[in-house]
Amino acid sequence: MLHCRSRFFFDLLDNLVFVNETPLSWRSFKTDVRQSPIHGKGLFANTDIAKSEIVMIKGGHIVCRDFLEREVTPKLGPVEIQIGDDLFIAPVTADEREGSMLYSNHSCDPNLGLRGNITFVALRDVEAGEELTHDWCMTDDDIYETECTCGSTNCRRVLTGKDWQRPELQARYRGYFATYLADKISQNDPEP
Image 1 (tube, rainbow, N blue to C red):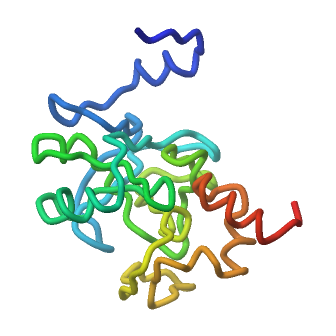
Image 2: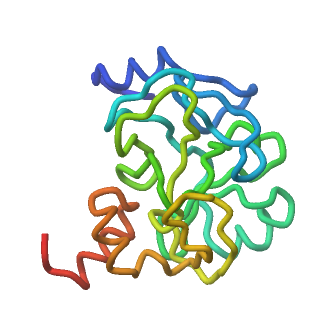
């Protein structure tokens, strides 16, 4: 049974955007999914969004890396958000896939950051029509390298799963990394 007295929680319930019959994730009613110039589908603001406003929350099952690589990714593609060294949140069936997707593409000049491990908030005021993006370095600690297609003026051109270790990105996104990454950063950097 769910016990919650928070007005915030009830505001979220009032504004749920159900994308199918098994929604696992939540996206603000101020957003729409449509084709993106960055990649495939993207999430866009359909009205202005204020700085620090919650834009989306990733839902799904907590799975370990082995299960993700063996059971989820081969069947569903990249659908996860990393929440720990060996932990991810992801759908586990094809029926759950659409209801878990956030459609936030990567950008080297993002307008979303994280609060906790799964809640995405606006880094700044966002205008209607803008694509809602986050920098993968805020969520990922993995082994990969891929070309960046974000097109921003400060594009890194190549993204890696270890970009969170870059001091300039740590400084830029301080306070907006996934909790598990923020903990790693603080262990190596005693500066508040």
